[in-house]
Image 1 (cartoon, helix red, strand yellow):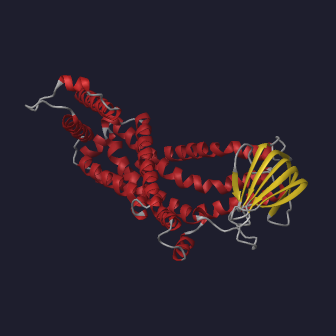
Image 2 (cartoon, rainbow, N blue to C red):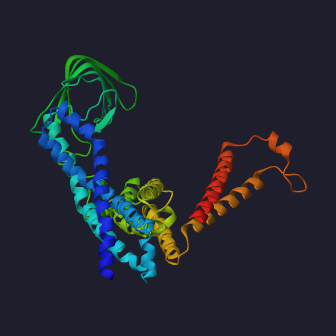
Image 3 (cartoon, rainbow, N blue to C red):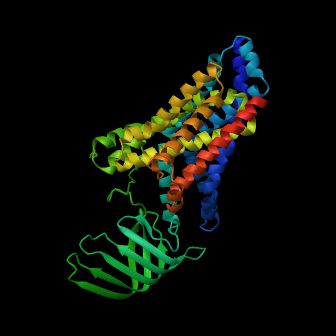
Length: 440
């Protein structure tokens, strides 16, 4: 009996999972499709290169879309069962909510394994392969990656600016270059026109400038040199991360595997920002796959609640939970990289907070305590906190009552107006939620 129910629930989850996975992966790919089409149409890059780029980019998309698709599919599947009162039938048949965890947990475990394998191996390989492929393309099409009216700092010890680049990209107009390869003699180069000349046998290109001048100042700012030229060649490295003279590209933190990150951390000063970045990236190898378990815990109580069931509501709740997770993740990473908090805590904060919330809501839902009560409690607590803060900050009479004249004379800050409106909105939401529950 339980096996049949488990398969039934898994079927309700699996169908929307693959649909949502495809939709969200396609949406993320569409964010890059314009750049890929520009490479193919305007830069003359072959279709095989574009197909390889898409293939290399897919793992970095899947590691994001798999947990999202899992969360929304569980909400939709359980929401449909709850809307049709099938969850009520399960409970009346002696099947508790904890038994429904088994198929949901199995789906979450499978998603965790796939996401972990993708994050541990496929994402670093895909990111590094993308860099190598772009360098190989740039050897043949040197103008790729240079944008007009943008200070391009992707070159080693050099900043390049072009006022105008034609569609075919054969030359640049209004060229400005800051060359800092000689640390004691930085050079500024200005030219009317520049041509990029590719060299497939080397890991660099030559920028041939015409009708311009070079300006050099020594480190002591005592000597200034100017040279006018008709033609001048500048050699440009294709990547800022080329190991000097070896011709091999080094890896950044997003292109390293688990063992490479651990090895790089041993050779990095713990007080440097680069070390904190490596620590965060190392912990993300574990936190992102474990988000599948966190999303599974959150999806069950929200999915089985009758008052918020249904496919459309499940989708909206899923998007809200995903946004909350990634806002916490980005905030934790930012504070961890700047050293305000421990980078380990910054990486694990979303899983700890939302995982604890998921366990609590699951226990409450298993005890048949309606979810709206917790929303009401949170709203009541927020209203009480806002009122206390308001009374503490507002002017008062000697007897402790509010002074209307003082309130009128005192300008109300924008933050207080926002909190006042937020309290009123919570009150309205709390009242409407109670009415809906009584009607239902």
